[in-house]
Image (cartoon, rainbow, N blue to C red; front, side):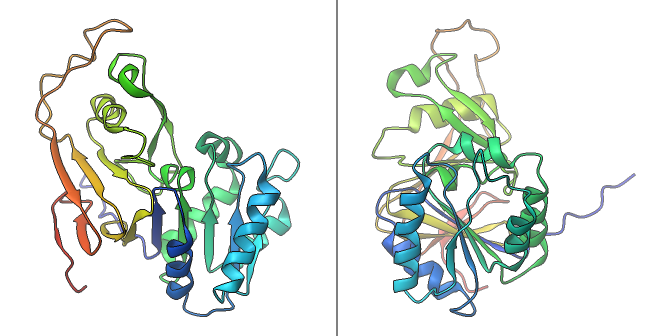
Length: 273
């Protein structure tokens, strides 16, 4: 039987590669249809979550987002607590801070919280989910959780895990240029050849509408690595510690105002939608 058409999400995702996020916070406040809408700040990726949350609350309120509050999720504050779910259902913006992205998935995967987050993103045009650093990397179907320097180009030197699943067939890596992460993203695409790889420099990010149209913002460069023409991968034939190989990667370098179509994987100037 033919598969039913995939309904595009109505919500918006905003992902930043880390670093100074003042410009992103100002952008998010401008994107909210009403300044007083609840903004829920989730800092579960950081073990020092209270200090981080207070800084974000203060910054967002100074920018006019008077409804900014810390939504605490941790070992002692479960994601499916009734008050937490109530606040999630009322929020205009849910913001994930940086830290360790595996802490985000550890506390959210398999929860009612994540189901509601997906539902609202799918069905509500004014709903925004945003994240910086780990909070950006966790959004897609998969995320890179390990891989450093030359070791990332050896089998076993890179590790991926399951993300929040808001963006299928995508990988987002953060602090990309500053920490030399091209090797680990390329390795990740050898492991997940159906995915598109996106490397976000610091102070640089994407506004993703309808789960498809990604507009670049910020001062740096977004590197897009497309493996759909990949061939010659040796990943299945080599042992742990041996160097990985593959040919046919296609790379784009994008800057502010340019657009990436996540479905067609074509890039170019911004077009009015």
